[in-house]
Length: 331
Ligand code: NAP
Image (cartoon, rainbow, N blue to C red; front, side, top):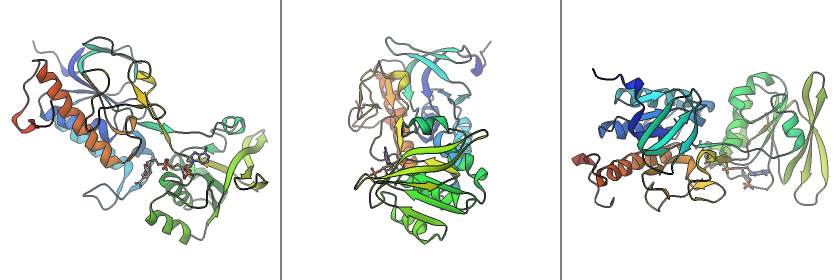
């Protein structure tokens, strides 16, 4: 009797992570008849599930991030990928087949692994930030913005995330103050334009957040100290909430002591490929990309990882490469 897909304990290709890189790898690996299993992780759909409008996904002038990720998951399932809601807690890459152990106790071995665990929000590392996390300090405006109706909030950072979060927060807050450590933003110009035109937004340039102040009972933020990056002077500003949006760090803990990393924790791949320092292990998306970090580039890398995995397995004599996937440059 044929085993049901959900009972499989060995797969040809295991994909870890469920952002654009993971789901695209699942689509391509499925179409290559590799019957991949994708383990979604803690946040199925990844970072796009905590954003709002996405305006740079080709073919969609505007789509909500969560909707885009649901569509990607449906696409991967429709192609035949097995999508598992679980969290890989241990990954043994020391010998093939590789072994993944999950939070539920599930153990899966795999001939090839595609890592697509993405990135997570960075924090400033202030004790007061830690103290008020969840009580006025947040890294997710779409998750927590609703609680700041008619209140005043600060957003820290000058990249796309900070500007998008600030704009999103104007839907609720009475005032949004963006605090940036330099005198120019690195966010896309179109987002900057929208920010500067919004009457609810003030920008404080050349300042860093150095302390969050608040009450103990009930716990909540009421002010923040900002320090000038020009002359070190400090000022206190009133704030009911603080949103930290200072970039992301790769989620590489699972493989940090097994794979070569670089640039502060990103998984290193051979240039122009998704091959990591261990043959048979591939990395795609924000886990490995410290330059572009876009949904569309992640998806592109997911495609590359599936093709790289297919060629790796073929070279081991374990599968045949589909004719349409015979890419000359891939050895
Ligand atoms: P980011 O582009 O790396 O920007 C991080 C911002 O935080 C920078 O302005 C940086 O200042 C500031 N910062 C970093 N460390 C800081 C610290 N310790 N104290 C104060 N400020 C600090 O990160 P991101 O905005 O999260 O974006 C990550 C990637 O995702 C980017 O490639 C971005 O393009 C992409 N993304 C794209 C979209 C979109 O296309 N719509 C939306 C969101 C994110 P400096 O400028 O001085 O370095």
